[in-house]
Length: 608
Image 1 (spheres, one colour):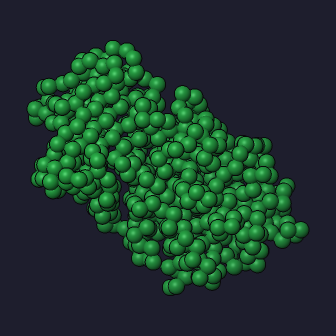
Image 2 (cartoon, rainbow, N blue to C red):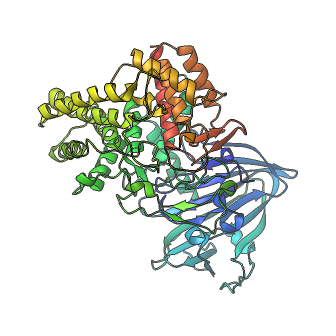
Image 3 (cartoon, rainbow, N blue to C red):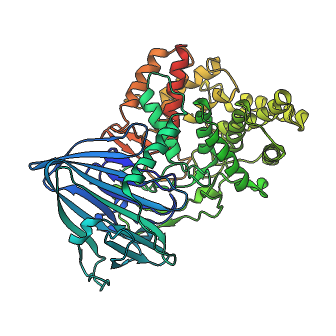
């Protein structure tokens, strides 16, 4: 059995996002970026696919937590001979990518076990190791190289380690890829530090950080950022942590926001619905910006707008649904057959073929987020407004084009009702920009297209037979994305047609635990095999709907249930399997966390 996702913690330096288990094993790490090839991939296979484990011999974890308002992880171990505290963190930096692990003995003595297995390029590249004894501070170091990647591991306890399984002191001599192992005794009041630093293999070897200074700077960074947040609701701690997660998934230099830091964590254990989420979806990023603005953060939102301008610049008429963190457009999908997969779920994929899809809702999501920025007082200029006019031209040119929907279905395209509503929203925000903010544009034409879509959606998206809006114009299924219709302003939350649609969604998509599926997979519309667990954001959308239609008790009850699915550190994945009480799907998931924030805000506003 794979380590349950709820046992993992996220670390972040706003460049990458490793996962460390409750037992002290870093099982997933990509350097230097979220979307770089992994050097630890035990999450998707076995320990020999790469990990870095620090644990106390004969010990057990008695507590773990983030230092308040940070992503500095503190884990307390207790053994028969003593107690130790392990601190894991990545210092936010513009010029280096490094991971620091500290062990401090609190009382007695503890024996610390160290197991490092570096496997570059998703465990496809065997590294070469050699010891280094000439660091500036005199600490011993280990240099690890493979192709374009290099790692420098520093720390006093390296003097007691051994390279096992086919490795000599300075070379790798065949056989299985080596691992660095060792045990060290740490007594009360003593501290041991390790630092793992990535750098290009052709570059000059970096000097290690001072761990104490790096820890102080990391603490200050996160608390300074959290200090600007405005959080006041009945779920303050979870909302605060969710806002921090959204920041942690934002690339510091480019402003791109990854949907999740992982790939191929399955939507059904043992299934094939396994996708790479380490890219910037315009939809996810736009929805993230909306909640950041609602909680007082405009700077991060402006960074994303700048990212969008760079990604789309020069090619707005070929708008993509997702890009790489730097705005890259080529995200070819591949399968890694050598990795067993999380819970034997195959294939393991990198890249994402859905990048080639047309999804009609995306321009609307972007226009809503940019309108929120404008309403929050962020000034438009010719460049930023010019981009939005290009997006509206793109919408008009694709007005009659069928799409693959918000859930990236791999069947044939359709007219998805949610997508058509989002198109309406795009033109609506264009009209508002001219009429409320005095910007220039073809407002008469946008009025016309907005009204045409409004009529079309009520005519073709509504089905009298089932008394509900439908997933597509040509079927009688419902889709949880329809819960987003009132969020756009297309209709009120308590409009009779909306309430009827909610009732139908409850009937068709809600499981026996009160959780929502995205849609009924057995309809075959998505063109995929297998099934999937309930999607957390969909149920958060239902909480929001309840809260905004005077079903406050239902909203609070469901919200409390969903809050209970977060792990002890407040992290959520994409889905939840109520049968096994396990988180599923990529982890942690920006979509789920922004859904939690919006749901909590809606409940708070319903009492206001």
